[in-house]
Figure 1 (cartoon, rainbow, N blue to C red):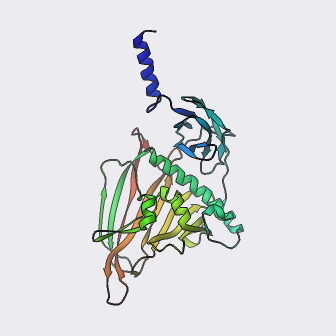
Figure 2 (figure 1 turned 90 degrees about the vertical axis):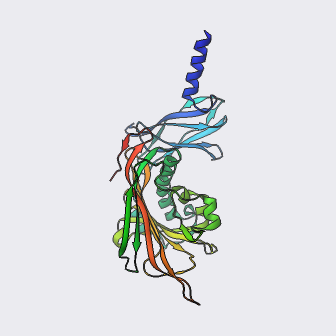
Amino acid sequence: MPRFDRVLLLALALAVAPGSSAAQTVAGTVVDRWTSAAIPGAVVVLLDTAGGRHDATVSDAQGRFAVRASSPGAFRVRAERVGYSTALSPVLALAAGEQATHSLSIVPSVVTLDAVVARGARRRCTVRPSNGVQAAIVWEEVRKALEAADVAARRQTYQFRLRRFRRVLSDSRLPTRDTSSAVETGFSDHAFRSPSQDRLVAHGYVESEGDTLAFHAPDAPTLLSDAFLDHHCFSYRAGRGANAGLVGLDFAPLRTRRLPEIRGTLWLDGRTGKLRFVDYTYVNLPYERAGAPLGGRIEFAQVRGGGWIVNRWTMRMPGTVIRHRGLNPVVIGMVETGGEVVEVRTAAGEPVSIQP
């Protein structure tokens, strides 16, 4: 073979497998077992035989995926999506540089969570939701949506154009005194992001930054992290009033946790199991609250193709703190900040619609 042809073939091989010509790859499709239809938006994870995670991606509009291992070995591929059962491949042995093909079929399996909660015994708060029977069932559906949002963000699957706002709230009745709002002209690679888990564990969800306080809220990686699961306990609840038809997974910091923390509820649709939003409030704060609690809401949504994103968020923080001699400081004014996604595009720039 002429030298030029050999160089061209090598260049093509490197283009197919960027970053390393000896990468170990498993590629395939995720399909519905009964209809053989492609399943987009499934989270596909490459695991070693000890359960260690090596790579993760989200299946595309044709159900296709490709995950990589940094070294040869024995692996399994797991696929899951909200509303479907989890599929796990047999052990796949990957030699150095091998590119294997394996497809996964998943079965529709809608869990009626409101019925699960209605049958449950008295709620009990447990560290890690997997330790409680009803809480574990609710958490499993929460986890699938959070995983999809987390993987998409890490891979920068979507781009977002955002509208951010700031409102000054006067008193306990929360009339709006001043409002500002702006739509970002460019696209961001993420809609909403929290600090690192190590930082939240070390300093809590409220930090001093010069003369101001920085309030943090939980994003998908935070809620999935070992740090969050180890420092909070969980219990389930049925929605009432404005949350009728929803199923909640409550979380609260452990009593031994003294830093500024959050407690709240992850809310899912009781019929479909889809994650809707998380409400939270700040606790262990060094001042008293007057009127509405400090906290916020983070809303999740599915986009066309099955992926999950943070769609809207709000954070309610102190606006004015009055200090009385001999008494705890009291918050009498508040500031509410937040944002919403006004447009979603793929990394390639194609528009993506948000599902209702």
